[in-house]
Amino acid sequence: MDTRLELYEYVATHIVPGPRSISYFIPLILLPTALSIPPSTLSRFQLSCIFLPMIYGCLAHSYIYGGGPDVISINVWIWSTVLLALQDCRESFKYVHVRSNSQPLSHESKHAKEEMVPQASKRNSSKIGEVNLVEEAYPSDLYRRICWVLTLLVSIRLSGWKIGDPYHDKNQPPPRVTRVEFLKIMARLFLLSYLVLDTAAFYSHFDAYFTQVNIGIDDPIAPKSDAPIFFHFLEILPPRLVRCSAIAAQIFGIISFPGGTLGFALITMVNWAGLISDEWSPQSWPLFFGPFSSVRDRGIRGLWGTWWHQTMRYPTSIPGRSLAEAFGVRNRSTLDYAFRTVSAFFLSGLVHTGLVPPEPTHATIPTYQIKLHIAYFFWIQAVGFGIEMVVTKLVRLANPGFIRSRIAKFFTTIWVALWLCLTLPILAVAMKELGYARVYPFPISFWHGLTGRGWVTWSSEL
Image 1 (tube, rainbow, N blue to C red):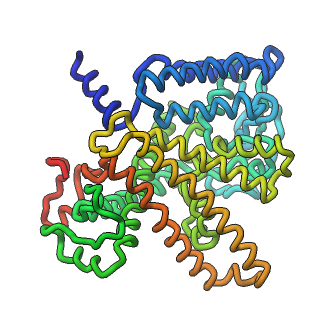
Image 2 (image 1 turned 30 degrees about the vertical axis):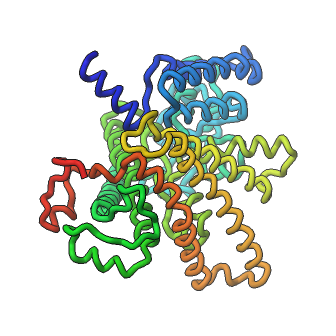
Image 3 (image 1 turned 180 degrees about the vertical axis):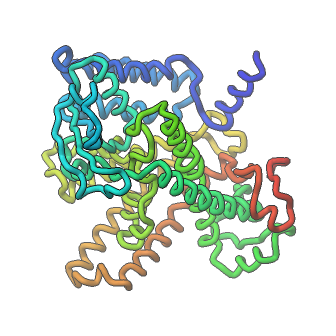
């Protein structure tokens, strides 16, 4: 066997799951093909009956052959179900183009159902100029239809799309910034992500909790003998608080560093080179993270619903809305919100189980238990939403103005910290079993160099 193939097999089996059969890729062709067939040829029901069984069958085969699903294939399963069965996107979705007043009508806008709307009131004209909107329904022209479908498939956050949900549609398209300003934002996030993840990784190297499965979250902190002197001051703090802070920092850094900074910056540079359109470039999308102040203002709901990235928010919540509709639940009611929340966290839990390879190198428990720990962490967040909503409603009934006070925001922040200290250890079990703290995340470490341990960290395993 070729050495490169052996290396890939090892990585896909022991480090992170990936495609191991041709059936993994077939749904990536079937889904755009299905959506490119006009409603006049096949209705939504007919399209679902023909294509979904094929997509599900290919995914099932790839799961069996590859030892289980990964994040991308689970997302394909959810996205296919939403677009083919739960939403009539060919009839109800509209792609919102941004066109400057000086830009002539292109081939693309000639085939659009146009609704020219001045956007000076919604946008900073100094950044992007005077613009109008062109709302393009499902095109009849084959070329435009393929472009429309491909753009929809990469718009997982449904930014720039009107989908028939007034709450979503009123903010479309999202405000955009220039490439230079966006790259500046990414540079700041890059630096923050690096420092946060480097700090968490440096700490976890000296706390055996992150590598030894027999050490509990509440066991006393006992830094290794070669730990910096200031680490010993952490022994006076609650171990759960210190370790959960490190876990939260690791998660933020892992998510924001490769995807929210490097990946987005690379795509933006490709756009700058003229290889992809502005609508396919991140500066046209909402920022990866929202304002952190939403955590203080809205608690767990602000943490997950506003600050944290919303990459899969709509694909995972739409099934909940569809189920609510089936039961006759009114849109945007409290019960509808409950359906959406449970659906979003349930499916998010399933998506993240795709991070677990078939045979993790450092695992001491069965693979399915590692996946369950990941899923449990997400599933239990819906319980936190419910607790928070009940308490908030009771407080508003007792004292409507208190909820906006500084004292209320202080207690909300404390509540979020307590909730994460309660739930993050569930996820930490999976992170330890997967060995995330055993290899340093960066080849060069600020903290290693600052404490005289050498700037290069990838010379040996931690």
